[in-house]
Structure formats: C-alpha cells, structure tokens
Image (cartoon, rainbow, N blue to C red):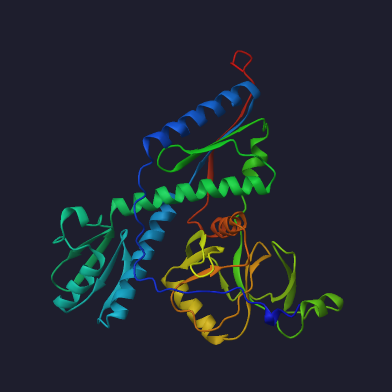
Length: 361
C-alpha cells in the first residue's frame, strides 16, 4: 500500500499549565481489597515459592523534571503575555527570573498561584510558591503537594508499565503495590528466577520521531534495496512494512506525559502524549518544515503510528490513533512511558523465596 495515503490523525491542544492534580487517596474499600489481594499472593508465594522484587522510582529525576516543567511554564506565561524578562534560570531546586515592572510580576504570579479571594471550598491546592524580592527578582518553587501528586502518579504509571512489560515477556504478574513513597513491591509466585525478571527492565525503550522516506514505496524497497539513509521497520500491530529515514528527527526525551484515552470525535481508543517546553518548540519547528509529509512514531524499532503532518503542531500535545482496541492503546502508552518516564526503575531488593512446608495451602 502506498504510504502517502495512510493517515492516522494527529491532534494538538495548547497547554498553558503543566501542574498535575494531586491524586486522591483510594477509597477504604479499595485499600482493603488491595490488602486482601497482597495477603493472598504472599500466602501463594510462601506455599509455592517464587520471587519478591522491590523497585525504586527515581524521585530525584522526577523532582528535576518538575522544576524544568515549571521553568517552561514561566517562559510560556511571559512569552504569551509579551512581558519583558531576563535571567530565566534553574537555581537551587527552583526557577528565577527578573521582571522589572511590578504589575508584570503580579500578572505572572496570578497565573501560577490560585486566587485566594475565592471561597475556601473552591480554592485549588497551590502547586507553586512565589517569592518577589521587590527589586525585580522573582523565585518560583514547586510545592510539596505538586511533587507528591506527581510522585504518586509516577508510581501508578510505573506499576502499569511493569505489568505490561511482564505480560509482553510471557510472565504473569500476581501482585504489584506501592511500598512506601517511591518503591514498588512485585510478587511472582512460581517464578524462581528474579534476575530474569529484573533484566526485562534494565533496558529503556527507545522512542523517536522519524520521517518516512517517500522516494519509493516499502514494497519497492523490499524487492530491491532501500536507500542507504533509510531502513524498513514494521508496525507493531499489523506488521506492515514502512520505509523510514534512519535519521531521528526528534527523540522522545522531551515527552513528559503519556496516557491511553479516547478520541473525542470518533470515541476510538488512542494514546496521547505531551511535550515539555523545549520539545514543544522542537516539534513545532519539525512539523512546520515538513507539512504534507508522513512521519513515524517509533519505539524500539517498531512503528506505532504514521500520521501525515497537515499543519504546524505548536500546542505541545498529540495523539496516536490506529483502530486500536483499548488494550492496544494501553500497550502503546506503556511503550512510550517506558522510554519517557523520568529516570529509570532501579532494583533495591530481589529475593528467590523457597516454599515453606509449614505454610497453609
């Protein structure tokens, strides 16, 4: 099939704030259910033997990513508001910028901190603290609630990613639960080789955006030979071949959020992603230079989607669609997350558990 005719749709939306809501605590019945499941699996682990593994998420990398998000947010506000500024920089875990005009400083502060004049029941939890020295220097710091909310979200995303990667490797996950603020406990009854499991997570997925080579069709390249600067990659779902340029137009390091969802127009399952400020600018430039051309979203040399660039994409968000089932959309999201989550999962403990002859079966 001619690749020029294939479209899978890419939508954009402007992102003016990068704060994540603090995740609500689970309902007591949900927490009790999780505790019962963990107890059941612990008993299965004792009777059958197996593996117990504890992972740690990189909270330091997450904190750094949050501060970089805040810097991008401040830049977006002063840029869109045409506010003169100087010296925008990261410093000591926060963001500093000089804005000479006091009214301009107030405008920036009001964009970042919820209005306190509203009734308490409608006030949002502040995600940023602002210090104005009065001489033009402003300092912004993420609040603990912002960090804790993102950390909780990262834990949940990591648990989902662990489950998906184990499924893809043919290993059935019995239980994975948060273990403290930044750790995840994984229980695998019947799996006596924890090193084999942890090896699955030693490699981070490689995510890239690469332009499609339109000098010939993929069928022609398969019959003869692809151009030296191109190669054949296959779609993860359909196994359809695509001729893509080897050069990476843009890597996935600037993706800061990925999630499965539904297209509002078609109600079809999709995976959505969002760039940080640097990625938004880079992606806008790439799409502006390549209007009308198809490009491939690639993870670990598997093509996830091949949309056609219809217009410059300046909003910093996009979606990957392709007649997915909900499970497939979730798998795409997991592939992207495994290559874009802040930092990596590290193993802090792994044990092979021998069966306990005294354990109740």
